[in-house]
Image (cartoon, rainbow, N blue to C red; front, side, top):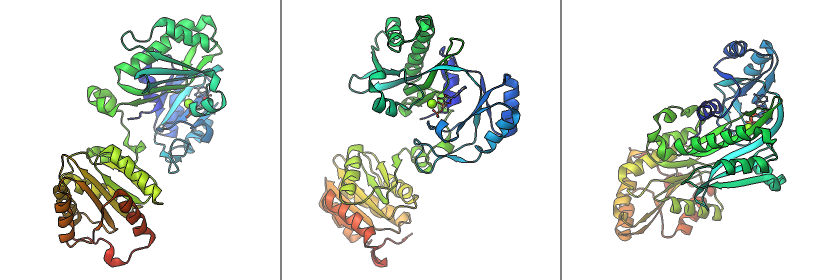
Length: 399
Ligand code: ADP
Ligand code: MG
């Protein structure tokens, strides 16, 4: 789960990370009022969306007056901000954060991620802050400093100082840098985050280290331990298809293609998407319905896949190991009687009781296109929408 910048800043400040004073606003007038409360003569109005790269596309504006703040807000509220991280449809702006303007001497990149190779938390830092980490690793790979934290002892002071030294920071800033790094590490582990990114972490004109931006992602599987973080969820920032899936306990990722996928097992779902691409098509989604694949789950899955208007064919790919193909086939048949599916449906079953499963599909009287192998299923799915099938091979609501 992702959260907003202002929320991440509040959480991090509880762990000793220094941030500029700021306040949240839901309207242009409120933003101007908040700025007056903050005082000073320079403010930064920042669109709160779950994506970085806002600065480049007008989502971060430096303002010097009431009027400038209101104008900046008028251009943000209700709009969709499209950055390189949002996808082409963008993310809606419903809140802005008004922050005191800071005089920046130096920008640093700081990230905490899970390194799967070492199975440890890895700190990634660079003196080339402000740029996205992808650009830094492409343009300035030598500027990147990495450190792996030993979980038994946590982030040690000497390690934090080594990072400060490698970034070429003034030694007078060491204590602040150690506090920042250790605070982030503690926030990362204690709150079950999977990512903490401060870009930029800045050195100000008056020699303070401040987090000017903050991003945190949390492990969904650990959210039950942190009710105060679960409450920060903002559905307006999520793909509505994915929110619906999460609410139903299905593992779904929406994609741009038009072949809907219903698969049991994440690995098989990945292989199915690959095979669709190999056959010349584009998957509309990743969907793992899990091991059970009961009729109820299959029906939920069909409803979810069909709620995406781009879907022009549905490929069901089930491997029954512990499960049984005849049960799955019954599930597919009852789901198709219950859910309106007006696009071709291709079913490939393999594993336990596959023959019984095929018979149930054949006897159902439904125009299900059957396939024996994954490649065949993918080719049929791609063929089904490419050939613009005639009415009688399309599924009709049988409700
Ligand atoms: P994003 O990463 O989404 O573009 P940031 O919060 O990193 O958004 O802001 C973009 C840039 O705007 C920063 O790199 C920094 O140079 C500037 N900036 C952000 N907040 C402030 C602030 N409070 N004072 C001065 N400059 C800021
Ligand atoms: Mg940033």
